[in-house]
Structures are given as C-alpha cells and as structure tokens.
Image (cartoon, rainbow, N blue to C red):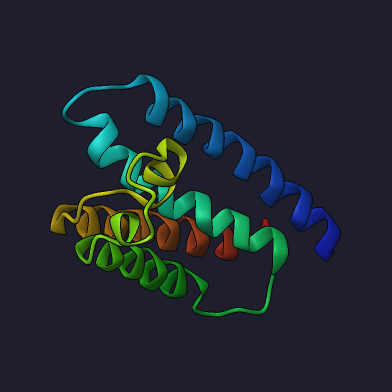
Length: 128
C-alpha cells in the first residue's frame, strides 16, 4: 500500500478517535471513562496523528508517543499551565491537563500496549 493511502486510512482513524476523545472530554463526567479510558485513547489519537505525517519508517513510534505523553504528564507535575498563566484557559487545561497523576501514566502505557498489539496484528496480516 502506498503512503497516500496509508495517510488517508490513518487520517480517518484519527478523526474517529479524536471525535470520541473530544466527546469524552466535553460530555462525560464520571469516575472511570473520562479519567482512565480518555487517557488510554489520547495516546492512540496522538499516534494516529503522527502516522498521518509519517506513515511508515519509524520503528519505535509507539514508544516515542508514550514518552511524549509521560513528558506532558511530568509537565503537569510542575504546574506548566499555571506557570504559563493559562489556568483559566479551558482549552489549554483540556489539551495539556492540569493535574499530575501516576495512574495517567499507567493509562498511557495501556494505550501504547493496545497500539502495539494492533500494529503487530496488522503487520502480520499485511493490512497496512
């Protein structure tokens, strides 16, 4: 499959997962889906976005996305939103988060594991 077709597939998947992520962020206010499932999905959304830009050739992209997510979580530990004066900016708080939680890192790891399983399965079946 050529790069253009891969980009289209990754783009469609990105939009689908992004819609779920935005819906969860805006409308789900529970104690499980938003704080945990949303964090699992965020890693998948970032990965799919990166695959639109770089559809092939980066062997450890899942790992890089996980490291990026952990880095953002660490920035939350240091109150980046507050330091930048964006505490009252709803969009910034949704995109970057506002509170550090080690459980978020575990959710990112779960999302990365899901990606790894899916990528290996797809690779074995020569689908992408």
